[in-house]
Length: 224
Image (cartoon, rainbow, N blue to C red; front, side, top):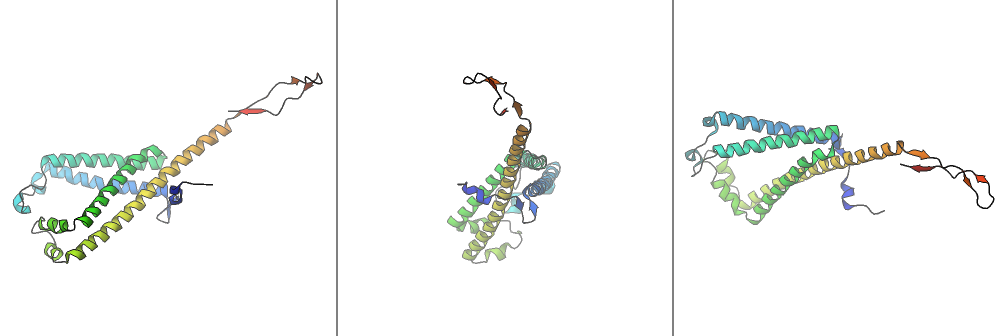
């Protein structure tokens, strides 16, 4: 029997110890906590702008770190992420596969962005040095990082991004397997419901045209 090439990546276990449904719930709660903390920081920054407002003199550039418009956009994104994570957690807990799709799409988008970052570092390695020069002078370990050989620095950054991509890819597979598990479970429940609610239709006796006598009906015809 031929199977889909994606079927080999399908598994009900996650992190070698728990079910994919449990892993998706834990992952959704973890993302929910992180985005809630980010939202609290952004809201506190909006209420007290002087505490988180960095001027161009502190950054050594000609721009400001965060203005009100960017703060509002970041707050809206945090609210949207909290909603998506809550939907994924609720969908995995209540076994509603459709609720997991937005979180899965976010994971794909995040993986694509990190992949573009890795490709840009590989194609344009000089951008790392340019980015380090734009950092504030009081940035921790700025001089030590800039003193590292540029080739070694690119290799280290690519290795770090590769580890992150591998981990994110594994989390994507866990969420996808959870979606497939819940979807197949719901489909099997529907089939069981239909099977247990079948009705048997008995046919009346019919006349035998050859012998002219009534014969027993054939076996019951089962219809849904």
